[in-house]
Image (tube, rainbow, N blue to C red; front, side, top):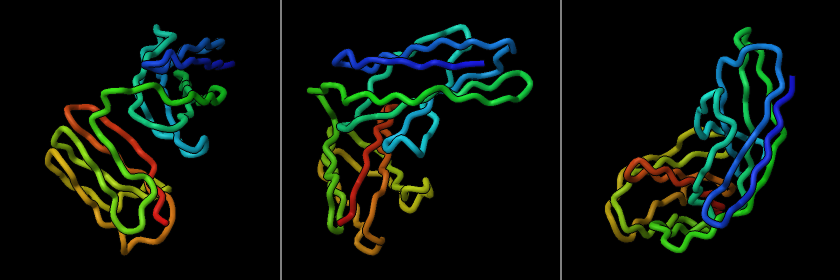
Length: 164
Protein backbone atom coordinates (compact mmCIF):
# COMPACT_ATOMS: atom_id res chain seq x y z
CA UNK A 1 0.00 0.00 0.00
CA UNK A 2 1.10 3.53 -0.71
CA UNK A 3 -0.21 7.01 0.06
CA UNK A 4 1.23 9.86 -1.99
CA UNK A 5 0.46 13.47 -0.99
CA UNK A 6 1.14 16.58 -3.05
CA UNK A 7 0.02 20.15 -2.77
CA UNK A 8 0.47 23.69 -3.90
CA UNK A 9 0.04 27.19 -2.58
CA UNK A 10 -2.35 29.01 -4.93
CA UNK A 11 -1.85 32.37 -3.15
CA UNK A 12 -5.15 32.34 -1.19
CA UNK A 13 -5.24 28.70 -0.05
CA UNK A 14 -3.34 25.43 0.15
CA UNK A 15 -4.62 22.93 -2.40
CA UNK A 16 -3.76 19.37 -1.31
CA UNK A 17 -4.33 16.25 -3.37
CA UNK A 18 -3.35 12.63 -3.00
CA UNK A 19 -3.42 9.18 -4.51
CA UNK A 20 -3.78 5.98 -2.51
CA UNK A 21 -2.77 2.58 -3.83
CA UNK A 22 -4.09 -0.16 -1.58
CA UNK A 23 -5.66 -3.58 -1.80
CA UNK A 24 -7.59 -3.05 1.46
CA UNK A 25 -10.71 -0.98 1.93
CA UNK A 26 -10.11 2.40 3.57
CA UNK A 27 -11.83 2.93 6.90
CA UNK A 28 -10.89 6.57 7.32
CA UNK A 29 -8.61 9.33 6.07
CA UNK A 30 -7.32 12.16 8.23
CA UNK A 31 -5.41 15.16 7.00
CA UNK A 32 -2.85 16.28 9.58
CA UNK A 33 -0.85 19.50 9.86
CA UNK A 34 2.25 20.55 11.75
CA UNK A 35 4.27 23.68 12.44
CA UNK A 36 7.59 21.85 12.76
CA UNK A 37 7.24 18.73 10.61
CA UNK A 38 7.40 16.32 13.56
CA UNK A 39 4.43 16.96 15.89
CA UNK A 40 1.23 16.57 13.84
CA UNK A 41 -2.35 17.32 14.83
CA UNK A 42 -5.58 16.46 13.03
CA UNK A 43 -6.66 19.15 10.63
CA UNK A 44 -9.76 17.41 9.26
CA UNK A 45 -11.21 14.06 8.38
CA UNK A 46 -11.77 13.54 4.66
CA UNK A 47 -14.08 11.21 2.78
CA UNK A 48 -12.35 8.23 1.20
CA UNK A 49 -14.14 9.11 -2.05
CA UNK A 50 -12.29 12.44 -2.16
CA UNK A 51 -8.71 12.91 -3.27
CA UNK A 52 -8.24 16.62 -2.63
CA UNK A 53 -8.77 19.29 0.00
CA UNK A 54 -8.60 23.07 -0.16
CA UNK A 55 -7.50 24.78 3.05
CA UNK A 56 -7.06 28.43 3.94
CA UNK A 57 -4.55 28.58 6.81
CA UNK A 58 -4.34 31.73 8.94
CA UNK A 59 -0.67 31.12 9.70
CA UNK A 60 2.21 33.36 8.76
CA UNK A 61 4.72 30.52 8.48
CA UNK A 62 5.29 27.32 6.54
CA UNK A 63 2.89 24.46 7.27
CA UNK A 64 3.62 20.76 7.00
CA UNK A 65 0.96 18.28 5.94
CA UNK A 66 0.57 14.52 5.83
CA UNK A 67 -2.32 12.13 5.20
CA UNK A 68 -3.11 9.30 7.62
CA UNK A 69 -4.95 6.35 6.13
CA UNK A 70 -6.51 3.64 8.30
CA UNK A 71 -7.68 0.46 6.60
CA UNK A 72 -10.68 -1.64 7.67
CA UNK A 73 -8.22 -4.10 9.27
CA UNK A 74 -6.81 -1.25 11.41
CA UNK A 75 -3.56 -0.86 9.51
CA UNK A 76 -2.31 2.75 9.64
CA UNK A 77 -0.34 4.22 6.77
CA UNK A 78 1.12 7.74 6.52
CA UNK A 79 1.83 9.65 3.34
CA UNK A 80 4.98 11.59 2.65
CA UNK A 81 5.21 14.96 4.42
CA UNK A 82 4.95 18.12 2.33
CA UNK A 83 5.60 21.72 3.33
CA UNK A 84 3.77 24.73 1.89
CA UNK A 85 4.61 28.41 2.29
CA UNK A 86 2.06 30.73 3.93
CA UNK A 87 -0.78 32.09 1.82
CA UNK A 88 -1.23 35.78 1.19
CA UNK A 89 -3.83 37.09 3.56
CA UNK A 90 -4.66 40.76 3.38
CA UNK A 91 -7.76 40.66 5.59
CA UNK A 92 -6.32 38.84 8.58
CA UNK A 93 -8.55 39.36 11.60
CA UNK A 94 -5.81 38.63 14.16
CA UNK A 95 -2.36 39.96 14.81
CA UNK A 96 -0.38 38.01 17.38
CA UNK A 97 3.03 38.85 18.80
CA UNK A 98 5.14 35.74 18.20
CA UNK A 99 8.38 36.65 20.00
CA UNK A 100 7.47 37.56 23.57
CA UNK A 101 9.21 38.23 26.88
CA UNK A 102 6.26 37.83 29.27
CA UNK A 103 3.01 38.68 27.45
CA UNK A 104 1.41 37.46 24.25
CA UNK A 105 -0.29 40.43 22.68
CA UNK A 106 -3.31 39.72 20.46
CA UNK A 107 -5.14 42.36 18.48
CA UNK A 108 -8.40 41.17 16.96
CA UNK A 109 -11.52 42.38 15.22
CA UNK A 110 -13.72 39.65 16.80
CA UNK A 111 -14.43 38.10 20.19
CA UNK A 112 -12.50 34.85 20.57
CA UNK A 113 -11.44 32.07 22.90
CA UNK A 114 -7.92 30.74 23.10
CA UNK A 115 -5.96 27.64 24.10
CA UNK A 116 -2.27 27.95 24.89
CA UNK A 117 -0.27 24.74 24.89
CA UNK A 118 3.35 23.74 25.27
CA UNK A 119 5.17 21.97 22.42
CA UNK A 120 4.04 18.56 23.66
CA UNK A 121 0.42 19.66 23.14
CA UNK A 122 -0.50 19.96 26.84
CA UNK A 123 -2.88 22.90 27.36
CA UNK A 124 -1.43 25.27 29.98
CA UNK A 125 -3.81 28.21 29.70
CA UNK A 126 -7.18 28.97 28.14
CA UNK A 127 -9.69 31.76 28.19
CA UNK A 128 -12.02 34.11 26.33
CA UNK A 129 -11.36 37.65 25.15
CA UNK A 130 -13.20 40.51 23.51
CA UNK A 131 -12.52 42.48 20.34
CA UNK A 132 -9.48 44.75 20.50
CA UNK A 133 -6.19 44.35 22.34
CA UNK A 134 -5.69 41.36 24.66
CA UNK A 135 -2.55 40.50 26.62
CA UNK A 136 -1.96 36.98 27.91
CA UNK A 137 0.73 36.82 30.59
CA UNK A 138 3.11 33.86 30.28
CA UNK A 139 5.91 35.39 32.37
CA UNK A 140 5.82 32.54 34.89
CA UNK A 141 6.26 29.81 32.23
CA UNK A 142 9.69 28.62 31.10
CA UNK A 143 11.35 30.10 28.02
CA UNK A 144 10.68 28.12 24.86
CA UNK A 145 8.09 27.45 22.19
CA UNK A 146 4.33 27.50 22.78
CA UNK A 147 1.38 27.06 20.46
CA UNK A 148 -1.67 29.30 20.71
CA UNK A 149 -4.98 28.39 19.10
CA UNK A 150 -7.53 31.13 18.63
CA UNK A 151 -11.11 30.07 17.99
CA UNK A 152 -13.58 32.61 16.63
CA UNK A 153 -16.75 32.11 14.57
CA UNK A 154 -15.91 28.41 14.07
CA UNK A 155 -12.53 29.42 12.60
CA UNK A 156 -9.39 28.16 14.23
CA UNK A 157 -6.11 30.02 13.93
CA UNK A 158 -2.90 28.44 15.19
CA UNK A 159 0.30 30.39 15.81
CA UNK A 160 3.66 29.45 17.25
CA UNK A 161 4.87 31.68 20.10
CA UNK A 162 8.50 31.88 21.22
CA UNK A 163 9.02 33.04 24.81
CA UNK A 164 12.47 34.64 25.01
